[in-house]
Image (cartoon, rainbow, N blue to C red; front, side, top):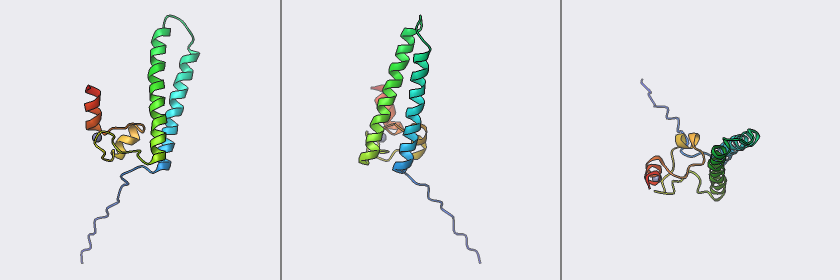
Length: 110
Ligand SMILES: [Zn+2]
């Protein structure tokens, strides 16, 4: 007899709140380290460039903070553009994203 039951290892479609927090925590820590490194780089002719970099990093930290709030209220992992779940693969790369890839493209062009 042939019993070929395909083993469908159901991959979770969403990160658990715990996983999401861990990833966000990790991202935040690495940004804070970057900020610190920039501060320690000191002052000089590069100061303006460094301060632009700092602004970018601070914006990302803000995004991460917002993502923590979404984990808390349960909206984390849902695209804010089209309200569909953001693929886990994307959240693994960009845990603080609020858009799926198509919506991100749309907003990036805006
Ligand atoms: Zn979307």
